[in-house]
Image (cartoon, rainbow, N blue to C red; front, side, top):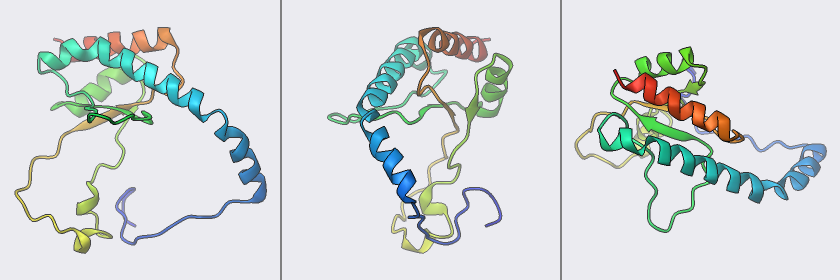
Length: 151
């Protein structure tokens, strides 16, 4: 593998010790609470950033009807991703780019891809982790994004 996330082979990692399994079973009891907190956090971010999205400054995550996302990531799209990420870093908001290459373009899956339609420009996305953020942190994130996006 030359670069991170450029998978050349399909593989699996199914190793787990008995100790890890025991810890995992206990942690599973906490999962519903964690998921609900992430959903509340995502709702606060969406409410705070909707104005920027309506004005065309950002693309916000879309939720399909009937879907109940767990919000492992809160991903926004921007035509100026790298600039936005730098400005957010200056304001103390950590972001990242995960899975920069769509799965159908990875060498490991390329031959299995049957999509042959027109290629659309890839959206430029950055991700903010808001998994366990408290209200003040969320408000800071919203304020920082507004400051970073607006001239």
